[in-house]
Structures are given as structure tokens and as C-alpha cells.
Length: 275
Image 1: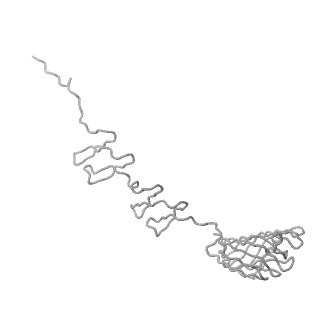
Image 2: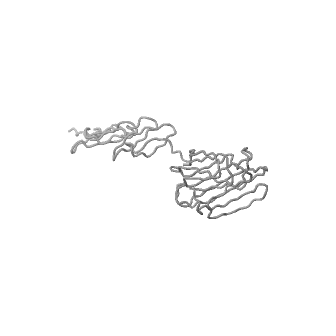
Image 3: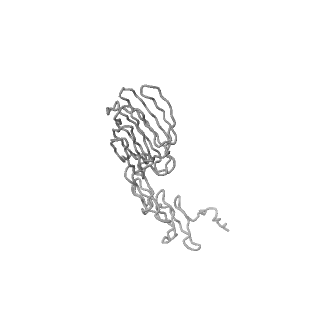
């Protein structure tokens, strides 16, 4: 009798082929039915629900990447679960909140913080020179004095805020007298504050007073701080400098600066608003 062949000795031990490549998936297509879903697209593609596909899935580019087309584009929401492209702005613009835009954003020129705006130019002509100031939109004021002098030698030069003649100016002052030593004074509760008590009578730049004053937080309605720095010569070519700092006990924003001299004053005053 011929011995039966043991088919198991020589038969090929094969398995059903279910995947063909790295990344393939086995996905159900119906009850108890599956199919191979090949890895699709390129790097960065996502597996996405797609009811029209046999497997209910497909590979697709991330929808965020579909929105951008140009270097610098960003993706912004226009509503819940809704995205759109916001193109890059012009050079040196900044991304700014803007509720009127569909995305709530826009590209705009940066705010001009710290910039100076000339609010007034005044020529001094008398012993009392009133300058109106419009402080709205500004944080501080910068006051510049150019070639200020008096009708007679050693004239005094004072300032006053808001035409307020009450006892609401308090200040300290370091001063170096012309031709003499210096001192420090702290007048309190005054109707004005001093720039210098030794103006000369010449308009020449080397003799007339020059300097500046900062007025801080000019729209406050309590104490408003100020600081002045001036330098000049008298008619005897003797130099003096004065550094004054103090507070104005304000009840309203600064809207006026009055410059007062013991004699008629001459010169030019520039007032800048600082944002």
C-alpha cells in the first residue's frame, strides 16, 4: 500500500494578504466587512471623516493649510468653528484688534506713543501772557522757552496753571544765582511758581533765557506734577540756572498756562502734547 502523502509537509503556509504598504489601515465598510485603506496624500495630510467614501474616511490636507496662500498669511476665526484667511499686512504694520472687521483683526500702523504734537506757538509781549491748551488725547505737555528776556535787567519770570490765583502751586527750586552762590527753596501754597528772578534784557541767544518744562498727566483732576529747567545770563554776562519741580493742586485738567513777568516779557514759547 502506498503511504498517503502528508500534504502538510510540502504545502505552502500562506496567509491572506490584507495590507500592501506602510501606513495601510483596515477599515470597516459594512457589518463584518472590511477593506484596506491605503495611506494617502503627502506628509501632513490628515485622516478625515468622508461619508461619500466606501470606508467613510479619506486622507486630506489639513483645512488650515488650504486657507493660506501667501507668505505671512494667518488663519483667524470669523465665528464658532469657522476659519478664514487674513493676508499679511504692509511692512511695519502691526496686528490690531478691530471689532468692525469680520475676523476681529486688522493690520494697522502702530500707535504713535511718545510722539510730540505742536499745540501752540506764543510770542510773549506783556507782563501776563495767557496760553490756551487743548490737552485732550495727550498724557503730558512739553513747554519750550526760546530767547525769553525782559524789558529791564533782573526781571522775574513766573508761571501759573489754569489762571488759578488761589494758593494751589507748591514747588521746590535749586538755583544758582548770577554772579553768586546757589540755594534751595521750597515755597508752599503759592499762586504761581518761579522760573527765574534774574532775566536779562537781550534777545541774543547767549543772553536770553532758554529751557523747558514738563507737565505730567495733564488731564488728572488732582495733583499734577511739573518740572522746569532754565538757563540764562543777565546783562553783566553772569550765568544762572534754575531747576524747579512741584505740584499743582488741580481740580480740572490743565487748559491754560499763564507766563508772568515783573516787566514786559519777550521771546517765544512752544507747547507740545505728548501721547
